[in-house]
Length: 261
Ligand SMILES: NC(=O)c1ccc[n+]([C@@H]2O[C@H](COP(=O)([O-])OP(=O)(O)OC[C@H]3O[C@@H](n4cnc5c(N)ncnc54)[C@H](OP(=O)(O)O)[C@@H]3O)[C@@H](O)[C@H]2O)c1
Image (cartoon, helix red, strand yellow):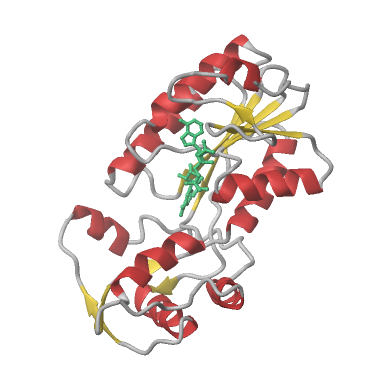
């Protein structure tokens, strides 16, 4: 049975995900009524699928703001946004807040190109909008670096990262959602820019492992763009929670235990 859709102001797509979940928590803590879109039926969500369009009209109906955190890792990011924009135009033309990534116009990755295309689609939609680009989330940086750390000697690319905590990004998105549409907002980055070698050593130490790291250059234009800092926002170190603090929390929660294979 489809749950009854109540009249709430804010819809969060991707509200079951990493960032969207933090946005929902933040908005609810601020006393806002929030509707969460998900493909999976559950009592706490409005069911819908941005790929097929199922349930999207009812999910968007009556909203003043849509925070779009849903994403597609298979090249359909713009198609998802198109479905949302169409539904929003026919509904109450809500303020659309979209989260993108710092450097989508500088790093030649397919996923980044799709995000850039989506930014353009939203900017040209005629809807009131805000686009917030953020740097890499702590969990992504940890996952990227932890994979190589399984090797006896850890090859580490000569790049730096500016990891940011999703709770900090969520705070910014919640503020934007409750404010006036501002077009392309200033980039939002983590508090520190650190070499991958240092971040890898922190990941290893947090999971109780010791390994030697070896800096390596990776060929190709994507790596060159990363090495040139295309994904960084050095003038926007607005996040507060550091990578070390994030790792300490994860270690306390038992999430970093190393399983020997
Ligand atoms: N990871 C990073 O380092 C980083 C950095 C900067 C910006 N961002 C951006 O932040 C956003 C959120 O990323 P995240 O890591 O929080 O994502 P995530 O945890 O992978 O969550 C993805 C969400 O998308 C929803 N979704 C996927 N396909 C859908 C569809 N067809 N219809 C409706 N919902 C759909 C999923 O909901 P259900 O499965 O419940 O349907 C899920 O809640 C993305 O736009 C990403 O590009 C990420």
